[in-house]
Image (cartoon, rainbow, N blue to C red; front, side, top):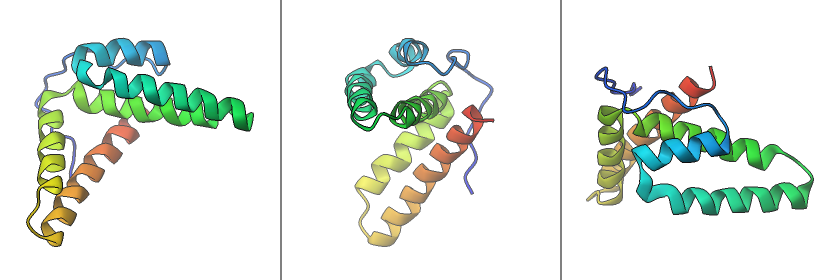
Length: 116
């Protein structure tokens, strides 16, 4: 299994798991993803209202906490984005699977790190 590729460099400290803190952190480490986050927050709120459950909001927060965890470590972010690019541009299904597995493993490791 792939492990996070930490080289000891953190761009920012790990933020608390709240929409506002994650948005502020994302603005520093991956500002280009802010529109995606805001769209996801809007959808999570709408689903929470429609279902009467806070689970969509919890899922939103934990997903973006994992994204920020990846992005705040430059080496991990580079490995994640490289594997994602290679999975999307693979010449064979097997190559795609291998790179997609790396993406999933890095994401799962980040998700686990923020949900310890």
